[in-house]
Image 1 (cartoon, rainbow, N blue to C red):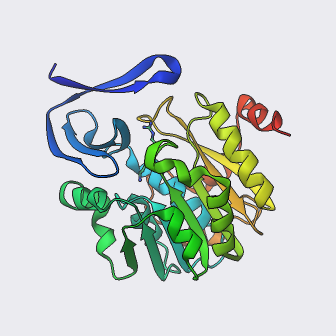
Image 2 (spheres, rainbow, N blue to C red; image 1 turned 90 degrees about the horizontal axis):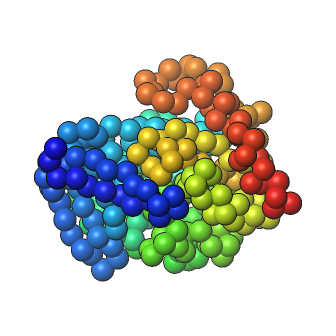
Length: 282
Ligand code: AG3
């Protein structure tokens, strides 16, 4: 056994530990501590402030789900805003949609993109596409001042601590709502319903108050706490399953590794304890 890297899970007084071979990138920026490590079990792993953001082994699950679910509900998504997501994985998936003419990426920390472009090019290299504009600034301020409209907004944040915190506030959600077109959709990473039910409930309450339609979908992400992950789907017009663009999804026939038409519909089926988390809020 080599050196062990451990992400502590304070919610359950446990941890995820994995062997690592070496550190490829380390930088303490004004915002956070960024590391990319080489591991024998998970490929390269991006870690921010001690929390796993992605591993090369399973990043496809998170990035396919956060991008394709809204992009196969909106009938013609052209302009997409990604907040956070400086690693580029979400942008990569968005660009697979022909209708998407432009993606604006707003991440507070350029060092994340710099590190990923160098050490995780398969995740990050679409950040260099002509269809993408990267802005390294505070997403909270960006959505307050932006005058453009978007069809889809994807909030690919860190956990709601430190720099990620503002990306879970009611004011921020209101500003995102204002930036969406009349049939716009917002999707956000919503943490673990298994281990952080309070947090998921908080997200539900805030978004449900604002949007006519609010749902969660879930996916299995082995290297995030509990492995059970939620995403919020808040929409002005479209229903995530009734308005699912099945024909388009089948015709595109993209080579996905997790997402598919069955998964799209099934992901909105919530385990009973998850439904209970939402019911308690009513
Ligand atoms: N976004 C962060 C997911 C949260 C992971 N949390 C944790 N390991 N405690 C991932 C960014 C990928 N584009």
